[in-house]
Image (cartoon, rainbow, N blue to C red; front, top):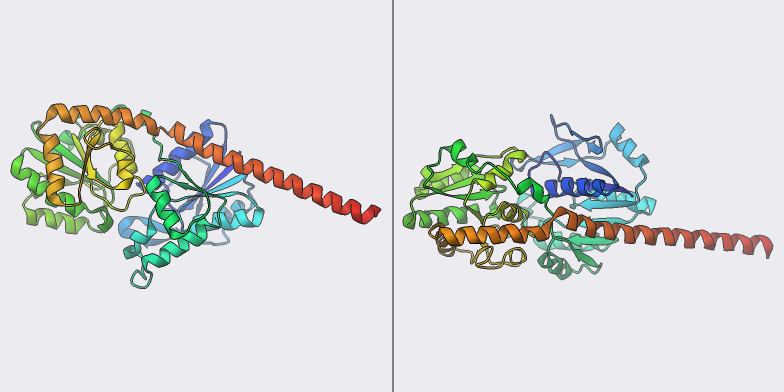
Length: 401
C-alpha cells in the first residue's frame, strides 16, 4: 500500500510522537508498504532517507523546539499534491495533519487520525492561551475526530477522554510500540563516566521535556526528601524546555544542586545507554496519553516510580514493574527510597519491567495499524466498484430506455 504519514511532530524533535512516527514508518516498510512522511522543515537538518517531504515552516516556540508548517506554493508542496495514496495517516492536530485531511477529503482517500496529545492541557503554550480555553480545544478535537474515517488512541484512558469530548467515531486503542532490539544493550557506566558520579551512588533518571506540564518540580521536592534518608543518590535530568532555568534555580534553593545533573538533550543513539546506566526511572507528568518514555525505561530493565493514574496503570502493575504513588513529594520520595534501599526488590522489578515491555513491540503495534489500513482500503475499493456499477446502470437506462 501507498501510505502518507502527515505529522506535525518529527525528527529532529526528540519526543514520543517523533520517534513513534519514525518507528511506525520503518515497521510498515519492513512489511512491504511504501511510506511517505510529510513534516515541517527544520533549518540545518537533513533527512537520511528520501521518503520524507519537508514543508517550509516558521518557528513557533523556540524554547520547546516546535515549528509550524506553512502552505507555500513551493516545489515540495506541488510535488506532494501530485502523489497518490491508498491511505493517509495524520499524527497530531496541526497544519501538516490538517493538510493531510484536506487532501484525503478532496481525493476521497481514507484518513486515520492518531491522537497523541491532550492539547487541552497545553493551552499555556498558545499565544492566545488566555483566550483559548481547554473546552474550546476539546470542541475542536471532537469536530475534527468525528470527520475522520478512523481514530487511533494510545491508551484506554485516552479513548475514554476523547469519548467524553463527544467523539462518536470508533476509536481503536493501540499502545505505542517499541523496537525492543534498540534497548537490549547499553553502556552501564555511561552516566557515571560522563558525570563522574560515584559508584556507590544510586542514579535516579528523568527523560523528557522540561515544561510546566511535566511536573519536574515535584521530582525535585521528592529528591530532597530522598537525600535526607539516603544521601548517596544522584538525580539525572535529561531534556530541555522553557522551565530549565527555573528548575535549576529550584534545585539550588532546595540544596540538592550538588547531586542534581541537568545535562540537556542527548543524541538519540545514546538513549539506551542512558537508561542502562541508571537505577530507577522517575516520572511525574499528569498529561500523558500513555508515556512512551516509561516503556523505554521498562525495555532497558528499569523499575519506575510514577503517578498512580490511568495511562501508567496500563503499563505498570504497582509493586511489580514499579511503584505507583500519589501526586505529592512525600509519597514520591517514599516510593523512590523503597527501591533505593532494597537492591533485591529493585532488580526484581527491573526484570519484571523488561519482560512486560515485550508486550509492546513495534511489530505488534504495526500489525494492528496495518489491519485498520487494509479494512479502510478494501471498503474504499468496494465503494468505487459500487459507484462505477451505478454509473454504468444509469448510462444503460438513459441510452437504451
